[in-house]
Length: 105
Image (tube, rainbow, N blue to C red; front, side, top):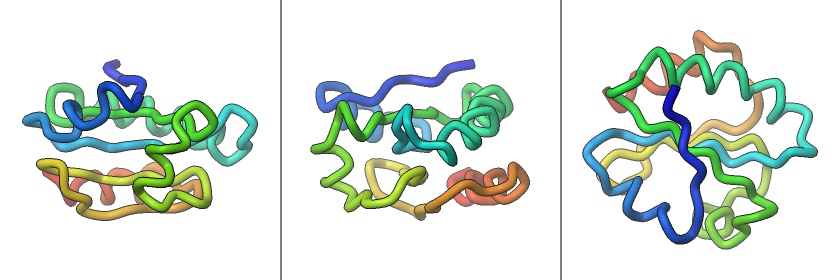
């Protein structure tokens, strides 16, 4: 499983890489974020080598959250070539998350 931790220092390099990126904006105190975590981990395994999964803790990286106008968590943002393709707010079932990720494939 290749989940990376998104920080101000590495974020731009990762989102401008070759692979599409699923950016998960979350916080440790967020119940729906914790519910979503196993599904995000499963997607990271399922799409290994095809998708970069990036977790951004909004408490530790408020600038990144502000940059993407993340006001509610969990927020998933799908990026390709540094550009936002789509976003999803709130916990969703795995099959909807898979359909969401497939937009970048």
